[in-house]
Image (cartoon, rainbow, N blue to C red):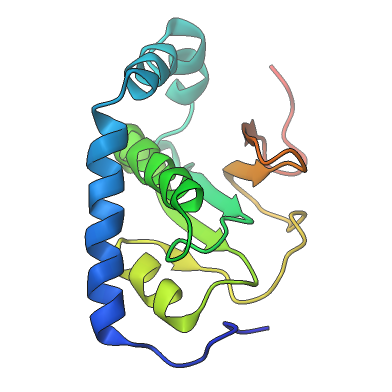
Length: 158
């Protein structure tokens, strides 16, 4: 299943990139993000992330399912902004950031790609199989976001 609007409007892509960059800056300067970073940089999470590095042959594949229309609404832009900031914070350990939502237009897909995201073309229904660690962000029925670090299939819990 492809984008709902198959035509890429380059002027809208440029405007959407600017809006996303503005959302990133706004989120980055927020109290919420400072607290988020404080927890992310805590010992427990850093210990878990220490086992993930490109030199050890492992990395995190970040996936955002159900991101929503980043052109039409602010909450999806903020959700994607948080994922982009998280990928930046994780550095080389975060090998990729992928997004999926069947409502994304071709213009939104192009803007996401311009921001360094890969757009998933096929609905994995949130249960795709993967071989490396994955950080998934899913929107719940109450429109809250949850983030979880998952182990690859067959990996043992330490």
